[in-house]
Every structure is written in structure tokens, then in C-alpha cells.
Image (cartoon, rainbow, N blue to C red; front, side, top):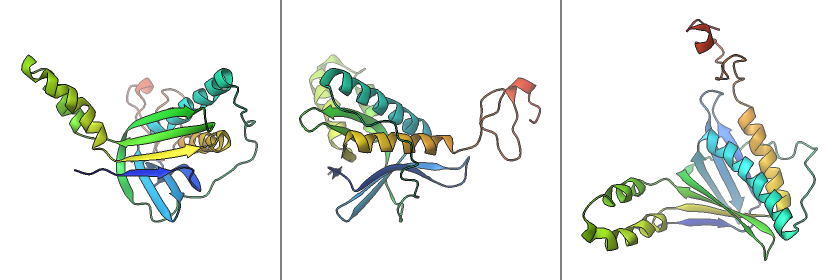
Length: 197
């Protein structure tokens, strides 16, 4: 089975965004460039962790390699909605980050979620005769999965981080007692023993 690598090095635009009402939002990473538009779906927690880990990566690149980082953004930046049409290419299972010292750029790779990961783990518990085959299988699933690869400057990375944080925080407000999201009709708060809040 062939896989696709959607590479944008660099993209014209790379953002995190959502489709749907708060509580029913679907999160996407979207890259545009060279007449192509690629959208991949992922979970809210993945967007939040991606922003956090990118911030850590930039800090580490500055510490270890002396990379000049842009100041924290004061302006709102890119607040436009996702480009249409938002067609999901695949659902993200794994996110990879790297810093390319030669070009002073951040590389983000979103890899498709695959069922093969479970099969490989199950295969490892079988007879010892298959150990040699399993080693080959460990590499094979990653190679067969679609991926989105984006290369960003530190400035573009900072803009992505700020927008991703705004997108994550734009959902339903948290309950002040339990921290779970509040629905417009209220919610059953565990701190109130199941009474509506």
C-alpha cells in the first residue's frame, strides 16, 4: 500500500483550527502552499501538547544553538477561519518535532494513526522464531502511514503556538469547581454530587 507525504517546506499558511460549535468541535492542522491545501484531524489535547512542546523546542534551540527567537507576539496575528474546503486527509496518531540546525527551522511531522501499531505489539508476544520478522514489522507500519511534514521559521512557529493556544482556550468555559467544560444547559458537577450546576 502506498503512502503519501504532504510536505510544505515552508507553507504559505500553517494553522490549528476547528470546525463545529463548542463541545462538538473537530480540531485540525491545516497547511496551504503551492496550490495545495491539506487538513488533518487531531484531538484537542494533541493541539495543546503540540503548542507546549514547540515552545520547549524553541527555548532549547535558543539555549543550545544560540538561535535568535522572536519576542512574544503582542498582536492577534492570524485569526482567520480554516480555508475551505476542510477535507480530512487522515486522523493524526503521532506528532514528531525536530529542530534543523543547518536551516534554523522547526520541522513538524503529523503521522496518520494506524491499526498496524496494535498488530505489531500483539505479534511480539508470539513464538521466539518470529523475532526476526517482528523487527522488520516494527519499521514497516510507520513507512506505510500518510504524513504531513511542515518546516517553519522560529517566527512562524511562534505565531502557530499563539494561535493554537487561542483555539484550545476558545471552547466551553471550565466549571470553577471541577474544571470540566460547562455546557450551555449546565452540567452534572461531581463536586455537587451530581446536581446540576
